[in-house]
Length: 305
Image (cartoon, rainbow, N blue to C red):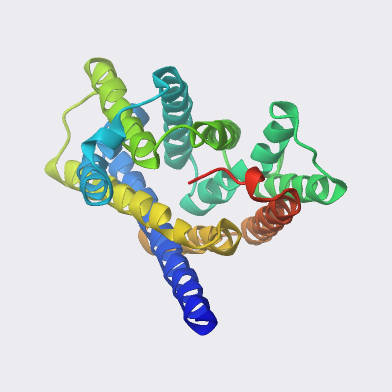
């Protein structure tokens, strides 16, 4: 019986890791496709709208296979409104950074979100943050400075600033979700966020929407589908412990670098490589320390997913 249980846990870990890798590749593909679409003339509000629109079918298929429609009923509607507002704002900023920056640099800076999440957990949730996690935060900021190289970088300051604000927004989403998941079904959280993206995007389209060539719409449509698949795979990866699968998220930086080189002829500088390595190390160490903290505090410290 113990052998069977161990085998079952092992299978969950392996499948969780594979799903997380697939999720990273999907999100990296989405980023590359949306950047290509932006080069065809699409702006950030349009990218948010079409990304939400074309990801919704994937989300609905997942919801119907996993849950009933009754699971979509929100228990705390205002919490969903706040989560969606924060998430859509950070998504729009992230897409704008994607337009302004090389793909690898935008992705690397985007992965400072766990660093900001640590800071927000200290400021808002009043969680204890020890010296080790503060050291990881400092290391991550050193990585950002190396990537951005203030005063000596070819990267536009506006793009770097927007990318960092977008990462802060994503950290806020992470902090919000830790509360929201205690009362809300994951299916409801995913569905209503996609629905909010379509609604807000539709309201903005009369101002920002434009006609584009079929190629542009094809790129953003496939990008939206890739984003939906990435969300599905990321959720499926949670069958394994988060501390095991989350380090594989950083493969997105590698994939973004390859896509940037292949599609946009962006050869990453040594500053980008070194800074991304520090950001990655900081994020992985932060995830590990968070896992250790939750083990010490017991199951009650881990929000239900």
